[in-house]
Length: 191
Image 1 (cartoon, one colour):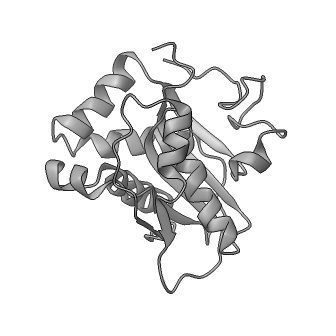
Image 2 (image 1 turned 60 degrees about the vertical axis):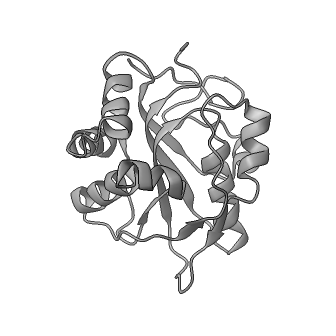
Image 3 (image 1 turned 30 degrees about the vertical axis):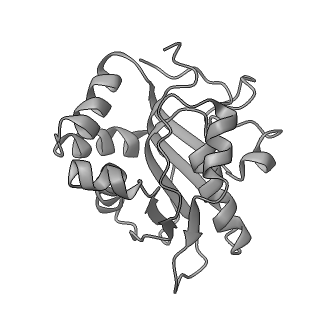
């Protein structure tokens, strides 16, 4: 399903990034790119990766994600949005790490875990307000990082609370160029 060219926060028409100039400061992101609305094949691929242990799907999803990205500076760090430890134990892997590693490999950009996950709460079914509260203290900066442009990677965007929380941590640490890419965008999919 194609993405509607609107800001994920206020639904103002914007393109090619899914965040408008007015919402950028609150979101902490310079840009956000999504491959598809969350429905149809996109929904099936996310489900296969997250719930059916189809790790090979990550490569297919990452190829699509790379295709929508603009030029990335050579020193742009590809960083997965950390998944809750309980989910990693259940799956046996971190789906965002698989996606980020694939994107780094396909773009020939550095890969790094810039963030550690602190909060372990499950977000499925939670409202935007609850998600924002859960994510407020969910991440911390990993040690020994160098300030470079960052591309955060996640599988699906629902309210944006997770990616915004991660962006805030990076901004507070001095990162000036923080963007994100997701495979599917649930907030505007009508699902």
